[in-house]
Image (cartoon, rainbow, N blue to C red):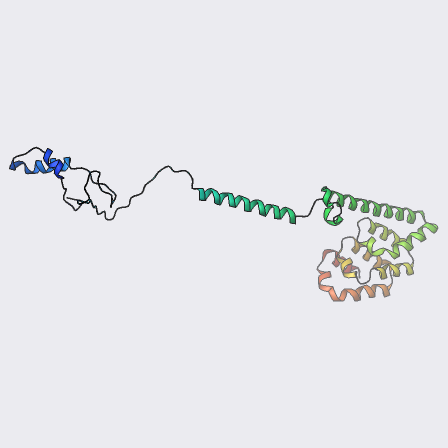
Length: 250
């Protein structure tokens, strides 16, 4: 009665029920309910043995039925996974085709050397260039210390390459030694070699030393040319540690 419908007993089951007195009506009703066949829980499904004329109907309200069974994976899911893997393989193949070949690949031997060059090869080339520059600076120092014609030839080389020498840690030592041996014309030539880069030289820890030595060795005309070039960047040079020393030297 709680479900909203009264239990019904079929004729076949009524024939087998035992008669009870009228006082025991409730007991007979309970017995009839116990002997009544169970109704199916799914609507629209008839009991086994029910005739077509007496169709079974059950109304279920506010009830959620969930059937959980162990089923094999759906073929559609496997197809989707297989399609995804094939697509990933295709994208990997496209990436491999677009990726440049390495230098060790036989098919990429004729490629660009700048792309295929390894960092170790570039580092070796840089070290070789640095060693060659140091050998050049060492030979210039030896020629300046030797004096005579060798020193004059070394002074001419310093005047022609003073810009590169001044910004190098070893080359600036060569330029400083040359300024101590140079005459007025050679000193003016060294200052002229630093022109248009005076502000950068004043802020450089190496070139600023060369610039101070050139100001000390040069006359008023060369010092005025240096000061004139620093006027456009006086604030940046004066607030720099190396540049402030150049300004004080002027």
